[in-house]
Amino acid sequence: MASHTRRHGLKRGARFSLFIVSYTPLFAIMIFQQIYQNKDYLHPVEITKETALNFFRYFGVSSFLVIISIISFIGLLILLRNLERRASESGEEITVTDVENKNSEAIAYLFTYIIPFVFQDLSNISQLVPIIALMSVTYAIYSNSSMMLINPTLSFWYSLYQIEYKDNTGKAKKTIVLTKERFLEEGDILRPKRIAHKLSYGVA
Image (cartoon, rainbow, N blue to C red; front, top):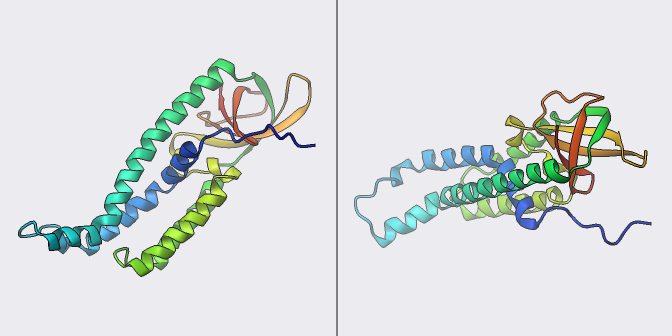
């Protein structure tokens, strides 16, 4: 029988930061695209109500993406620092008995980047609304699944593995672990700390 006391290990803010950071390469492309398409509006002759409205219309999305990306990066850095500290201090030391590299999953995740390119004009509200709707659905799935650690941005510094190990009772267990270790192998010692269901952060 499943335990009713099990909870998600990450707060909504942490999950949202992970989601946003996973899309920052795409956001950078979208920001460049919007600025390039509307560069003629970057240098108004004078600041008026009309030029302010034009800035909001043609660069509002870019401004929002920059702000939310910076906030999410700060939140993610705090989260990763806390996860590493918790894993080092209270993670159960285990010996990896089986390991499968999951870094290739990030490549499949990149296909979701194609979505916004169906809609070319980010200044057009009729094309912006479908993007927001699709991203909202993606986030709902992302935040409650193992996709949460599949992050193209994190792949620059971290690796993702599915590992099998035995706990202190001798019971075999599996978890997907995010770690700085680039070449994890069977027999390696790891200290994983649970962050969500079947998801962990590990330090060697």
